Image (cartoon, rainbow, N blue to C red; front, side):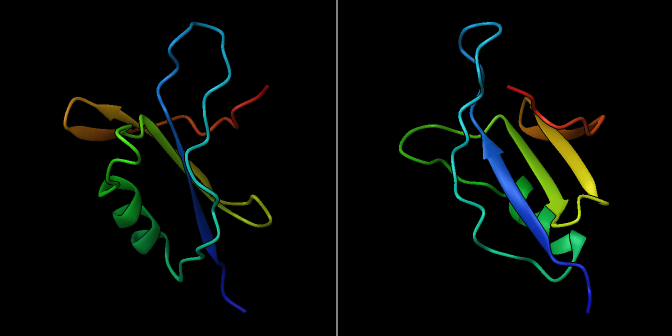
Length: 84
C-alpha cells in the first residue's frame, strides 16, 4: 500500500499567541506528495479568507511538510506540528 497525503489549511493568526484557525476538513487523500503540494500552493479563498499556511502529512506522520505564504509565493518552513 502506498502512502496517502492529506493537506491542512490554516488562516493567518490575527492575535499573537492565539490558535490558528483550521480552514478545512482534510477529507481528501492524495496519491503523491507532488499532488498535495500542487493543491496546497494553488489554494483558493474560502469565505473571503486566504490560507496563510498549509501542512501536508501522512497518516503515520512519517512525512510532514509545512508551507507558509510569502507574498504571492510559498516557502517551506521547518515542519513542526502546530501545538495548542
